[in-house]
Image (cartoon, rainbow, N blue to C red; front, side, top):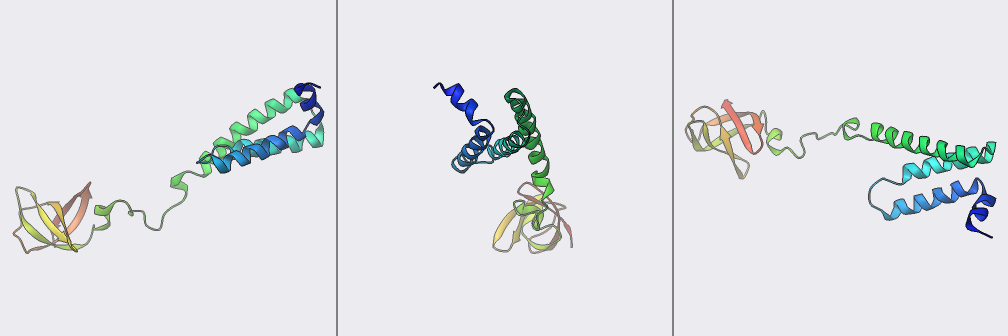
Length: 149
């Protein structure tokens, strides 16, 4: 008995076995890659069991469902679809906008340093002597933009 005839005898069960293999592979490979193909294989297997359509059409339906499930997952699983309760988590400077801080090293020619907690930050703003309290109005990378309190 050849492999082709063996697979032909299994019929729709091939898709369900493929789905199990893809789901198992998903647990081993990092990322979410094979689960969508596994979902498509399950759907084709169930459709094939219910209707018994030809294997050529099963391949076409699998391809369409696999592509559709990948695009659907990309659309609904985007990072911008799940708003964060801390959107500035990795933008340290943006977290300080609106805070009043103390000028540690005088701001001269638009550049100086301010103290935020126990850390010194580069600052840009109007010339200001050391010890003056200023308000953070913006941030650009690791530089705080400050203005008068």
